[in-house]
Length: 132
Image 1 (cartoon, rainbow, N blue to C red):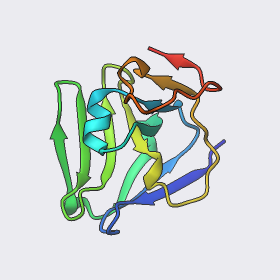
Image 2: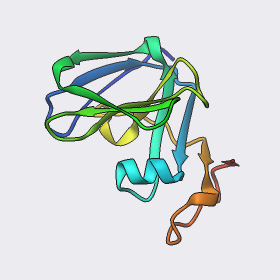
Image 3: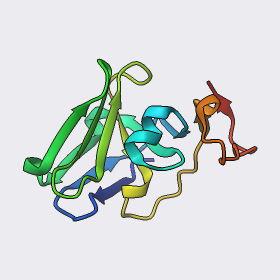
Image 4: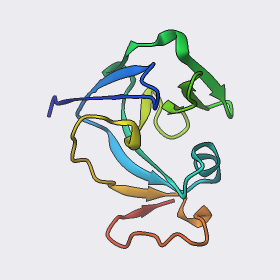
């Protein structure tokens, strides 16, 4: 599959495109993802870095280096996630936030990670394998 998907930040200042196939689609329940997103868990599409490019708004992209191997890029204007990098888990790959994809795509979560850190009110989806 060499399909393309595209997305943008909330305010539209940053627009990006990515070429599939993807490496992995996952839901992450780790404390860092929950804190950075403000959500119960984060949903990601992981692709090789060279398959991702920013089309518009490079000047609005800023980066937060959370750990030595994990960084989050986001929009300076609206705060929306552009992508994340986690070199510990997927070196040379980009994590794309599924919620910021604006084109139609059908990539369900294939695994759930760090479920031992899940929010107390979240039920782990029984049909998606857990990988910790």
